Image 1 (cartoon, rainbow, N blue to C red):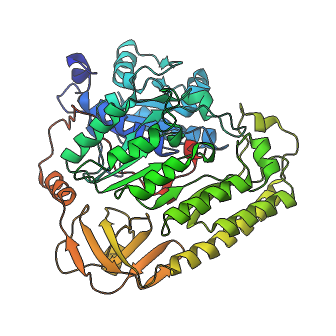
Image 2 (image 1 turned 90 degrees about the vertical axis):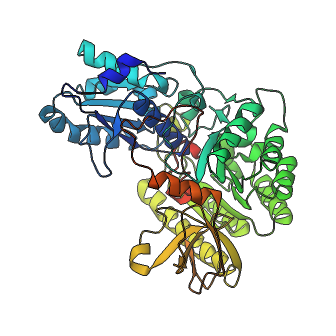
Length: 508
């Protein structure tokens, strides 16, 4: 937590509050951490810089990802662009945290000596103290903890949404996938107690939140360090008993741990949404073995069949890596076959990215870039066709859509609003004459389908004003607080839709 000296450090010599900006790269876990970082800074007296500040802030924090090969280049390119700005702005500080900071440690300050603070994935709560120490001592502060110091949900938070929130149920991962560096950076899985999770959900609902997303690197392995193999399905059912909680989602599960009791809980708990993100990675048993993924194509497709039998309208999405070392054309065709059989609503496809520190980086059979690119384009074309066909099955359906904020980039020009259907499909609908707020729920008839969205061009048949909409209205009507301090029970921000994810450590 912060103290009075931390707050004093966030006010400059003429009594003006110092501003901050947090830039986030990677997966949902990083988005979750960034809201904690914002809460910590505001608890220490900093004020968020205006939107579009683009580095014009007193403190700029980079929350990094280490999954993609170009993560380093992206970070150092951005740091380089801030160097002249820092020269012109006395007292400006730059901090680097997250997975890349955990991995590179001293390297960051050697390559970018104008960085003031480097902190890791396990000690994000130290950021305000490290900034103050760097200011007083006038030298870079590097502090990387080797194990989790405090579960992130115990830290203050600046929530971005009044109506939707992340709830982290675990951190770390016990898997050993050969392409992934995340377990080395986030550590072994550590679960929160179910009572703590449910208390946070209840507190969020009391604030007006109506949708929560349960978050973990391997979310359905929840309970592994508590000795309860059914802990996750029990947690889903418990969420179903919380009055006022309308929508429950979770990401990302692992096929190895996806058991029948979870499918039953999804099907039998009304507020658990008919949506599943199930990472495939490859349809080839040979490649899956090389990836050290503990399932095979038949097992994966069997899970999909069971989910669809229990939840016929479920929308299923996935992650796929193309060009893993040793992947042959026959292996790739097995992935294409699996995609045809599974008929995913959408897929996040990635060209294999060699990551130093992972076993796959040193494997024989690295695939030439042009071969990977050609396969990738074939896969994308197939999935686009399937996504469009699957979305066309929604035409004529009547859907309840939770109105969202910032989902439709063209809404202003088209006089439409946007939101998410229960299965997480993006829906654009004609703006009704009656006021509709983010968090409210509208009932619309789907008239058109594109590969990545649905359209309801007719009139809205029903508008349901909600507690979540009331919460959004209160937040936007309230005058800004002088210091933006948000302390107390932990609370979390709006989960970005899955298409916004760049893979990151959600790719399990």
